[in-house]
Every structure is written in C-alpha cells, then in structure tokens.
Length: 547
Image (cartoon, rainbow, N blue to C red; front, side):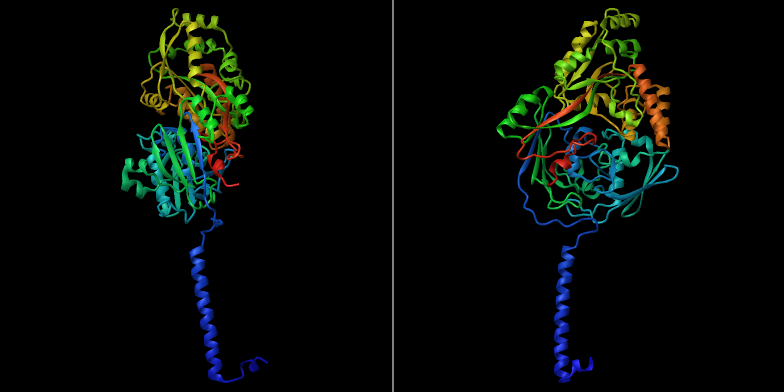
C-alpha cells in the first residue's frame, strides 16, 4: 500500500516533495528563531505583556543615609535596597531564608559547619544587561567585609568568614573560621543588606561616586535618581526573574522628618503611604485611610555607650539607677498612646523566646528613690551630667518626645541629660568611632524570633570586636563566642538564654517597650501589604507585587 502512495511522474513528484521539504524547513527555521527570541532561562517564567503605570509615593521620617551599596548604607536603608538588588539568599515574609527568590537556587553546609557552597542561578541579569555571577557575589561580600564598611553586621561577618572562593561562574564557596550554622541566614534577604549582590565590573568602572549617582542592581526596580536627605526614585524593570512584573511603574521614597507634614501629604494626595506615630492612628482611620500595622514588630530602648571608659555609666549601680528612674507605664501611655508594652531587656524582645530568650524576666520596676540611693552608693550623690541623642526615625516618630521624657525622668534623680538634636547618621558615626563616652542614645530595632538574627545583633552590640559595641568584657565575649561557634541549634538557644540573663542582671541597656509600627495608606492604591517579619525593612517587595 505504501508503494502506491508514490505513483505518478517520478521527477514531478520529486519536485513537489522538495517543495514540501523546503517549506517545512523554512517553517522550522522561523519557529526556531521565534523560540530563541522568546526563550526564558529555567525557573524564570515568562510574564504577559503588561503596561506599567503609576507612582507609589512613600513619605517617611528617615531612609538610611541613601547611599545605595550595603557597605555604604545603614541597615535602615534596606527597604529600597530589596527592590534594587537580588540577595545571595532569598527570603520569605515570615523571616526565614528561601530558595525561591535569591540568586542562590540551593546551598549546602559541610558536616563541620565551616564550609558553605552556594549554587547560583544562570541567566540573572543586572540592569545594564550583564550577567550576575559568583564573581559579583564574592566581590560584593568582600566589600562588606572591609574595615571601612558601615554595613550593620560587617564586624560579625569579619569575625566569621575566613575566605571566599569562586569555583566556576555560578558556584561560590565560603569557608569560615569556626562553625557558622547561620551563614545562609546572615546573607539572606530577611536579615540585613550584607547579602545584596552588586555588579563588580560596573562599580569599578564608575567608582563610588558614579555608582551612588547611578546605581545598578538586578532587582525588580532600577535606580532613577537620589538626593541625600530628600528622595530616592526607582523605576520598574519590564520583568524580574522572580517577582515578574511589578505593580507600579515607579516607587518614590521621600524623607519628611515632620509628622504633621507627612499627614498633610497623605490627606492632600501627595503621598500614598506615610509613617505615623501611634497616637494619630484612630484619627486617620476615622477619616477613611487604611492602616497597616507591624504588630509588636519593633523593640525600643537606649544604649549606655563606651562602658569601658572612666565614666559614670561604667558602674552597674548607675545603669541600674537610670533604669529604675524610668516610668515605663507612664511613658507608654502618653508617648506611645498605650500601643506598646514594657520589655525586660533591650533588644531581646518577646519574639526571642522562640530563639532561647528567657520569658521569665520582668521589666525593671519604677523606683526613683532606690535610684537616688544607688547613685549615692556609686559616688554620685548629686548626680552627674551626660548627653542623650535625639533624631527622627521612620519606625519611631515619637523618638524626640521619648528622649525628652527620658531626660525628664533622669533629672528627677539628679542626672542632667543634655539633649543633642541631630541626624541618626551623625550619632551612628560617633558610635562607630567611639566618640560617645558615657553618652546615651536610643533606637528601635526589629523584634527578632530567629536565633541566627538575634545572635548576630547581640554580637554587634556587645562583643568587644564590634564597632558598635558598648562593652569590652572578656567573660561576655566568651559567652557570645560559645553561641557563634556552636554546631547545634539547641546549644545556641541555651546560650542565648544565658546571654539574656547576663545582660539583664548587668543593666547593660535601658529597655523601654515593644511597639507596633503603623503606616497609613491610600486604601485605593494600596489595598494589601504583608509587612512580614523581615529585619530592617517592611517586606517592600510584597508592597509592589502585582496582585
């Protein structure tokens, strides 16, 4: 039967066959070319064409120091950085690392917890079209580790990391000095900005000034412009490999220190999201604005700086006296509108119970008479003078009033605190350069539930090798190092409990309260926002995600 199918004029039929084959070949070529043009790397799903419109405008009390590189920027600039960059390790809203939205599609820790291997995705592109590689990841992390780096957890990582190797364009190997079971968490999107990956070649071509003027990353948004102390504007990429097409064409962050101005901006339509104090929430809710709250998301407290110096706060009795001088219940009622609760030890909040924190510790009592007696015992019967810093903070708009209240409580026991109004960046620089002997400064920081995150913070604040430390106590260093070198989570959690009790008994800091952080939004433009439990940002990728 098959032979009959080919009956007819041999040459004419052969010509027809050649025509059919040629037509099929041409069609296959066209399909192949179109397919190549439309090819998407594995794991990077193609998105339908979407026309990007709209500008999401945020007005906040502060946005880091607005220098877009993790070694130049404070932890509080992370919000815009998660839009601009991809991180070595991705993260989930609940504060845990993820293989879904970071440059590394997988990673592995050696049996001794001293070698980590990260396998990077192929095909991730920076905004200039160049490919993100392991060499970029290595260089970015090395920049974070430099002594001049201002990255929040640089000291902690310098203490941990021994060397970084690139074994092929998409494989990164990090060896550590001691066991480091939390390294993936430390370099993830859910912790600080240290895991952000920047383009080595471009940065070296344009230099630090050129990069801060025109930053390039591989995140869902690209840099448009930035003016220190004023604004940052980002523009959406057409399609991000993990996030797809964002919801807004542009995102603009504005620095507006005055709360009254921020509220006026949301009321007149000049802003879509503003940070507000807790006492203004009922008023704005009544006017129909949508309020998003990071429930108990921050812990508030103050630091006693450079306790190793010959200063009054070097004495435990003085630190205890200052803690007993604070009426936390009153402060919460009148400064935080009752939307907070006293805490036992800053910065280890209630979330830390999951990481080994001691839930039995209670907030310090209010006892000004006992405080006066302690000052007398310490050799300061007539009190002393010191400085307390005041600056606007996005997460704590009430900061200036809180500082005034603390200074007022201190005055009642004879301690005169001179209020130094400044910017956070100024105070931070003084702290890193040890120019705050015996001074006091206050800050809000995320309430941490992950052991690795909590341990990194404790190291940063209390280990003698950290630029941020207020202590140089060998016994405390040893306790911290016991936790940082442990290979079992249970051992880390046990030591965190020991650290919690040590710091509490030492009156190492001045804990104030756990606070819920509110943001007011235009309910038409912003209808959903999971603020999550990531650190130093409000899960900004979720904010711009297309629904």
